Structure formats: structure tokens, C-alpha cells
Length: 221
Image (cartoon, rainbow, N blue to C red; front, top):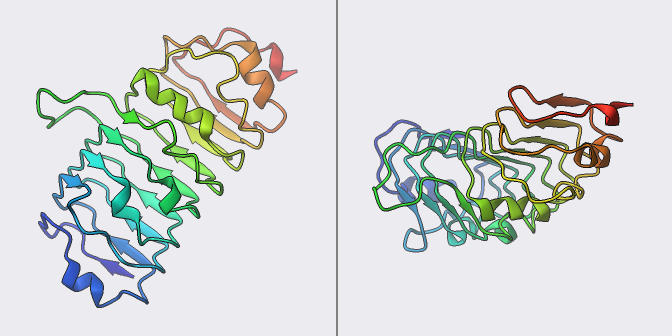
């Protein structure tokens, strides 16, 4: 385990990380100021790393190249950043169990950049073991919601609260046939139909729908 949190790094401390290349399982880089994890920044070559914490790092873009050598990664925390673009990176971390993208908000952005998260359609497509996805308090672009239709049926918990969901049809979550926990609070513009929940009702154990547009509970029968 290695914590390099809150050390005022503005680039990856490659020298320190290379010393632990084959042994490191848990790494925290939280609270540093990396801004961009992009194609020009070297990948972390830590093939046995299980958990990576990049919370509060000022991130705005995450490119697929950064995760190229994180073959064993299971837990990835990217909350409290300014990520506005998420590219196709799932094929590099196919063993991921938990992905936290919560609280990626507008503050600190360059004026010309979009203020909603743009997720590539296939960003989650190869995460066949993903169990928990947290997008809470991260506003989504309209097209980003399409990425949710590519989620694996392995997902058991998901938070979409305060994401400003826009209706994409009754079947947009029908692939989640094992889900147990779902939070859709604060989405007042989305029409949560009976059909949406009927598809989930066989496995759903907990639903949080406060301050949202849920009008029908017949499916609970």
C-alpha cells in the first residue's frame, strides 16, 4: 500500500511508482493537481494494482492510454474532479468492480469547455465484471446516457442521483438484470415509467427516488 495523497504533485511521480512496479496493490494519489490524464502523460505500469484513488485531483479529461498497464485494477475512484470527457478506456481495465465518478462538477472549468460529462458510448462496454457504478451529482450530456445501455448485467448497485437524466425510452436499463440497489433521486425531468422498474423489480432490493419523477408504484407488487 502506498499513499502519495496531498503532496502537491502536478505530474505523476513515475520514479517513486517504478520502485513498486510488481508489488503495489493499493495506491492513493488523491488531492494532487494533475489536471489532465491524457495521451501525453505516461501510463502507470503497475500490473498488480487493485485499487487506485484519484479523488480531488483537478482532472478534466481521462484518456484510455492512462489505464493501459493496470490489468488487475478492481477499484477506481475519480470523484470530486472536473472530468467532462470520458473516453473508451474499459478495455484496459476489464476486471474493474467499482467505478466512482461522483461529484464531477463545473467549478474551475475553462469557459469554452462543456459543463456536462460526455461519456463515450462504449466507455463501460468491456467492464464485464463491474458491480458498482456511482455517477451521483455529475451532470450528464444527453448522449452520455447511451453508455448506460452498454453496462454489463453484472452491475448490482448504481447511483444516478442528480445527474439530470433525460428520457431515452423504457428499456434503457433493461440490461441490468441483477441490480439490487438503485438511486435515481433528484431527476425531476426524467419520466420513470412503470415499464422501467418492471424490468428491474425481480432483483431490486433498494430504490431511492426522492425528489424525482416517479409516479407509479404498481410494479412493486
